[in-house]
Length: 475
Image 1 (tube, rainbow, N blue to C red):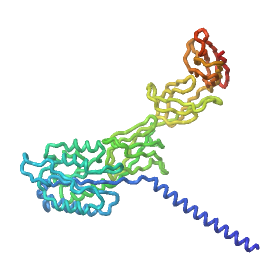
Image 2: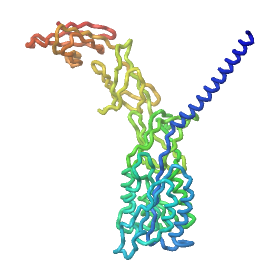
Image 3: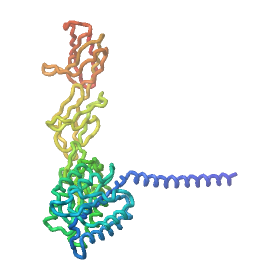
Image 4: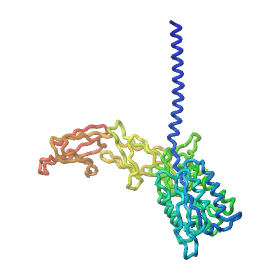
C-alpha cells in the first residue's frame, strides 16, 4: 500500500513538473508572439520607373550609347530585385513612340504606362526596356502628371517614382509643380531623379522635382541606381529628444505624431520611451518624407520640416519642458467627479479638463483655472515649473438642502460686496434639492409657480461653511 502511495506521489510530482514546463514554454511563446504581432507590418513599396526613351538617349556615353548603358544597368538592377519581398514594380516610358521631327513638330504627349503594377513582372519590364528604340522628345512634366493614374488605390502603400533622364523638359511643362502636386495629394513620396550625363547647369533644374542623383559616368550610374533602390526600400533610424528647460532629454511617455509635410497625411504614432539604457528609444521610420512632428503634451508642441538622412541615425530635439498640476479639495470632500478647465494665461481656448485628485503634466508656463464648483472658482497665474508638482487646493464644501412645498421659479445666489451673483437655477418641479456649495454667504430666492404676483417672492439668506449642512425652507 505504501509503495503504491509513493508511486502515485512520484507520478503526481512528475505531472506537476511537466505541466509547469509546458506552462512556462507556452508563456514564452505567447509573449514572443504577442510582441511580434504588436509590431507594425511594413507597407507595400511600389516603385514606378519613369524611363527616358527620347532621341537624345542615342548619344554616346563612354563605352556606348546612353540607351544601351541604361538598358544593361537596369537589367542588372531588376535581376537583383527578383527576391526582394514586399515590393511591386511598374514601368512608364516617354519619348519612345513618336519620331522627333523638329522643335515645332513634336509629340508632347508621348508617354505610356508600358508595364503596370503586378507581382512577378520583372521579366516583362526587362523585355520592354530592352526593346526600346529612342525616338522623340522629352515631356517630363506631362509624364509625371500621368503617373498619378498609375498607382492603384491603396491605403497603406509607399508609392515611389524613379525618373531616369538624360535631358530637361522640352514641352514647356513645369515638372517642379507637377511633382509638388503629386506629393501634396499624397499620391507619391518625393521622387528620385537620376540624371544620365547631364551638365551641372541642367542638374540644378531637377532639385525641385525630387532627390537628384548625378550619374556622370557608367560606374556612378550603377552606384546611383543601387543607392536609390536602397533608400527606396529601407527605413532608417531616428530618436526624438524631448528636452527640459536645461536642454536635457528627460521628458518622456507622451505620444508623438509624424505627419508628411507635403500631403499632411499621418504617417506614424509613437509613445515616447526612455529605453533601459536611459536614452530616448530608437525609432525605425521612412527616410523619404519631410515630417512635421507633433508632441501631444498640454499644450502640444511641434517641429516642422524634419528631414532624415537615409542610412544615418538622426537625432531630433524638441523643447517640451513639463511640470505637474495637482488639484485637491480640502478636508473630507463632498465632491464627486469635480473637474477644472485649464487654459493658457490670458487665453480663452480650453487646453484640458482635469479631474480633481489627479495629476496632469503641462508645458512649463502660467495657466488660468476655472474649477467647476458651485459657485465656480477662478484661479489665475498658476505657475507650472520644470519637474515640480504645483498643488492647488480649494476649501472643502458644505451642503445646502433646499426644501419647497410646491413647484416654482427661483435660484441660489452668492452674496458678496452687496452684490448677488447667480450660482444655480432651481428646478421648476423639484420639491427638494441638495447642493454642494463652496463656503460663503448665499441667498435663496423663490416664487411659487401658481402665484401670479411678484410680492409672493420668498428670500432666505444662509451661510455655508466647510463640512456644514444647512436646511433652507422656501415656504
